[in-house]
Image (cartoon, rainbow, N blue to C red; front, side):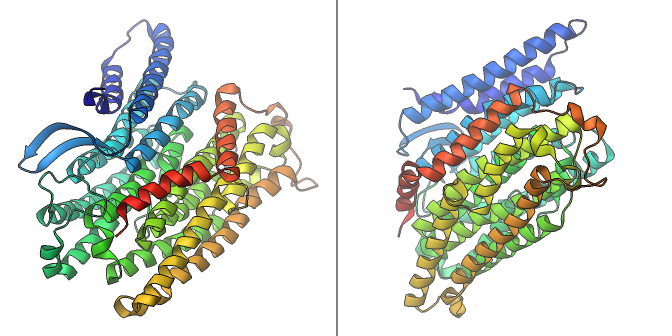
Length: 518
């Protein structure tokens, strides 16, 4: 199979979106609305089928396509390895279902042409991040992701949306600057002429060791730079503000495209650029581990206080993304596998939770937690799916979230034991910080139970009396149509499948972890 197929899932949606954006339907607007829906569905499905064909052709890391060279070793290249295949497969599975959901959600909105054009382009750019074979390629598509998602954040053009998009842009540009510094130093000290990602790191350790503290500081800067899109504290403020965007957008921002791209980039930076052989046991490891722990607790505690439903889920995303970063900071093969397992589990849990919130907003207009009394009986399928997503986010056994949190705890104990045996690393922090991370995860699980169960209790057990009585206007509220319900049912099935039978996924993830072991 020609390696040109690696470029198709990237450029097909981008050019399709650009063509849709350039089209002016004129008087045939109604006919174009139907044509646009068919075109969007066809392009998304075709792209996901192409990704499936790419993955079926092998994920051994030997398949690569050089698109062009910028200068010397600065190469834009697509490469398929196991970690990129995991991210690409997850995105390709979720995007068609998210698009189906968006068809119903956006049916009464204006400027649907603009919406679906950028929705398509975001798909292609995200695939570019998944297939990036070099740090230069990753950085270019990471930057492009900001500009194709910015119009989606500000889609409604309200004052809140404009302010949210401005905050998103400022944070993203600032983060990209720090990430750029990291890229420059990695390339400067790389032992690989093509700047290609290498399992275990691409630094020339002999040269890097002479300026270790400088490079550790650069790693810390790049971690927070890429961490802007992963909403690591204190670079999180843009994410709750972005909840003003339409739910199909916020679901992708919080579950698939933007935040996962930030976490994915940090995993690439840690395990495939700097390398855990260089970073492990250093003060930089403890700094990023502490940052992840602070973010986990901060996001959960803020979610408990938040009464706006989508913003509550946004703070939950802030917390859960740092579970992945905590796995990255453990800097071990099991830590990488654990972080990736939570990346997969969280994608399905959180997109399901956001789509449930969007379904309620679409059918009833309710956006605050205190407005949800009795909604569980009126929308039983929607809230049944929300129940599964909530239990999974809490880490209840038999759900996907339990598997990923168990893996993170196990990886943390192994890291703590290894560092204790080795003397604790710089300052002895390695003797206790990973164990403290387990305590933070458990505390976050408790807080997650509080902020998710509050929603379910109100929905299933409304208050009695006048304050909790269902209003007359609520009597027409029902579950949405199959376009919204089918994605929710599929996500719930995946959450249960991973929770009940995680072995195939974990075997694949352990192979990825084994590649970076030192």
